[in-house]
Picture (cartoon, helix red, strand yellow):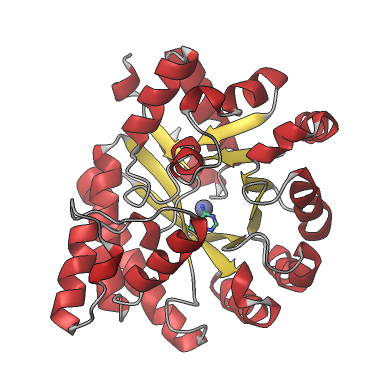
Amino acid sequence: MSLTALPRIELHHHLEGAAPPALIRDMARARHVDISGIFGPDGGYFCRDFPQFLDIYEAATSVLQGPGDYARLTAAVLEQAAAQGVVYLETFLSPDFCGGRDLTAWREYLHAIEEAAAAAEAAHGITLRGIVTCIRHFGPDKARQTALCAAETAGPFIVGFGIAGNETAGHPRDFAWAFDMAREAGLGLTAHAGEWGGPQSVRDALSDLRVDRIGHGVRAIEDPALVEHLVETGIVLEICPGSNIALGLYPDWRSHPIERLRKAGVKLTVSTDDPPFFRTSMTREYDRLADAFGWDEDVFAQINRVALDAAFCDADTRAAIA
Ligand code: ADE
Ligand code: ZN
């Protein structure tokens, strides 16, 4: 089997972060919202660093103004992901952006997203599941409201709870209540950590939030004892190398720690994070990893097996995509 024919499983992906620039531009024009500053000369998103990324992410998201817009977004994103060979995708969804954490509105957004996902599954054979995500720099109070939305809608479609946003804002312990609520609702747990914070940030997410997976986690490489702990506990890292390189965390693919983490025995998966913002796709991620580290079909098959095991979906869904 060639690299391009491998069925791919993607666990770290933000729905708004995958919005095609043309779709966002169309919606902005229709609503008379001026967000022209977020686009570069080639028409794609333009960001230089992480703070600017967070700003343009929120500006792009501001034009998505109702469940119908999210249905359109979901259809466009799933068509593109399926064309990249993705058969199972977990995406981060945020009640902060979908109805302002109001439970009734959140249910309406979810209904629209799920309907679009069911149509995409029938048309393109891709399965979508949602991870409800709070935004760290929005603070613990909003995270608690977000966790309540997550707990109320936990089920076959909403399978997880997580935290994204600015990792240097606040401390994981501030969000423990939200994660406890999500855990009690039976949701799988993941936290962005070890991207902008060092190894201690990963340790804090593990001890204070008791997560099953870490989003990014790459800076664990700076602490051999933490790498050993990850190996022993089987915590899975959702690694997004193209995102890390685009945002300047590492200068190039060969400097990225993914291969050192893999060789050390850490369980890891490969995802795109916010593909058009970082000018990437699953095919580009796989191709660059093959070029930089000589990864072949066996390595990618192993990565996808880890991802399937670590997916938060129920056993029936897992069996159907295996
Ligand atoms: N939200 C979307 N992408 C993100 C990233 N790479 N880190 C933190 N928050 C995000
Ligand atoms: Zn992310």
